[in-house]
Length: 417
Image (cartoon, rainbow, N blue to C red; front, side):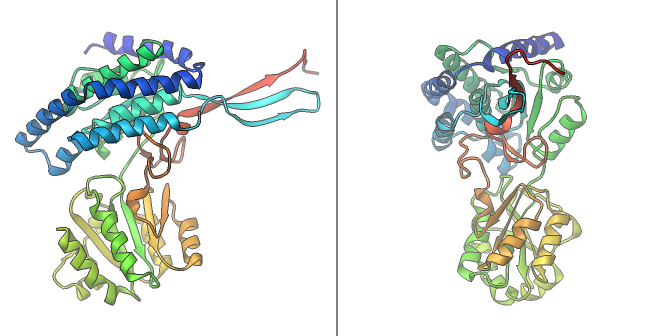
């Protein structure tokens, strides 16, 4: 794909972004409904195409985690449709008065929410990002340029073409949704240079991809770095609840960014909690790697290295460390964590509040699985990722997070004196 083609796409998106900014909520919601209908009409074709791409990934020796991320089966397809419809039901993120006052001279001043403009989404392996990204961008009045990985190119193209048809049928301007259709790194490199037209880039994929995008462009990037997620089991934790939460956090879906990677167990409950935890994880085929103190209680496990504490496994591996109280747990999390999702199991409100206030992460879970730190569980519907940045967005990036604001002042011939 030549620079001219990428530039044409970027220019078209810039032009349509100005139109999208003033579209009424009713039109954007109608577009989302029509997009879901259009997707439903190509369901079987998508399932068949995804199955072919999954089979190719297996032949090429891709990891099981990659294969799972690639797979669109009937359940996953329905989930994609449901998320698209849910985002349509969200309150309108645009044209909200965030702040307002009338100054002493009678000038009425407002701070109002507006779209960011043109959003470029660069992602790997997950075709569901195609529908999530388009849905969130349309809901928030942004034009979107999609660039998925070559491993799911045909599935992504089918999904995008259906959504384009639905959006156009609803009356949205052409080019509100676009996709870069050719594989290879050249097109991505050219997109990174389109800072005259693209307002924000959102990369979704491995740390290497995100680092390359952030370092290779002048366009602002909302980053989704590692999900090195922790769960701290405090000394007063309910044992049954602690085991259930730890297992769910790790095993419900091991290849996702909010899956548990390091379990911290208070030294005062380690002796009686670690054996049932080991049994539960063994039943789920999870390999444990522990600190020296953990090995003394569970002598059959491997020793955790310094590298393990920094690892996002996205695999059936869990590192375990015994800590001396909540302060040590918080220090470990703030030192080794990625600022994504961290949780505590405790019956103490004081400890829960201490953990919440001192852990520097986008999501903090109290007596809940780390797997709940996402757009659907937070009531956002579709999201385009979970940002580990602090600017511009943090945590799940939904329609509200893809807005900025402008200042508007209404006067009656007001002059500067």
